[in-house]
Length: 333
Image 1 (tube, rainbow, N blue to C red):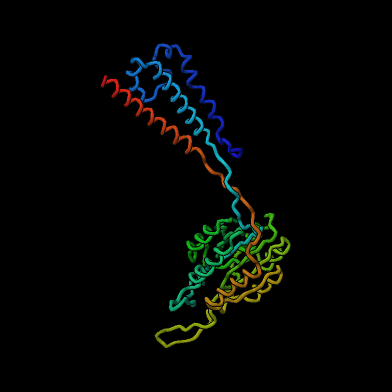
Image 2: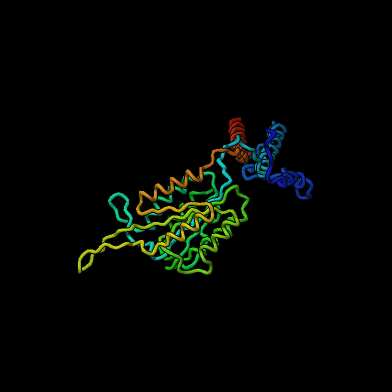
């Protein structure tokens, strides 16, 4: 019990309330200094032959119940056994393009044809869930860049926020440079052993105040490694009244800039033309940025107040039973 601590130690001052009640003038004219609802049933017992014994037991029970209630109010806690937590010291920020072109239906999962964002959610969601031990954050960008989730160990919430994102939420254009700048701002002041940004886009920089390569310079200076991913098929059949024609839906993808950003910051550029390649990209990133192996032991805080509170309730019920027993005995005499 050496680890037991009382979080609300001020509650111990309440222990003096019964003594204060005894000191009140009105209290000296009453049979009891402390009143509880169930004690009214005990009043008649005090006049019987064993009244002195009953008063003694009642006083002891009331004091014990009061002590238990005060103990519960002081909120006792105890540190539990150490629990291992994987901590890597790595901060991983993910920037996802929500521009209008992400609605292009050129991805497939099984027999279903999906747009790029839906496919990205399905595969990147699994990647995020695997990053236990990393602090993961989420940036959504279109014409503007927004921080959707700050860096957090709660990868489940980050994945949920990604699932809730919608095309056009940040505008229809693509501000790659602004997304990079926002990520660098959030990562550079963090005391991490390694800072990583994963940028996913299907186009070129068409908006924003910062040029992508300038933002890459800032990232390199802040020791932020950027992995860039260009998604989108290179061949799609479009059907119309005039017949079918084959088009390249990724014609606007600026692979040269994405490659330069990755090389300038020590990262890698990946091309994901379909969901299979997209899945392999995230597996490759898992190898480049391995998940934590070392554990940090944390001791959870266990609340102990239910024990004294339960004991107080139990003693109150016992008092009622004793009172009922004495009442029956008195009536039988």
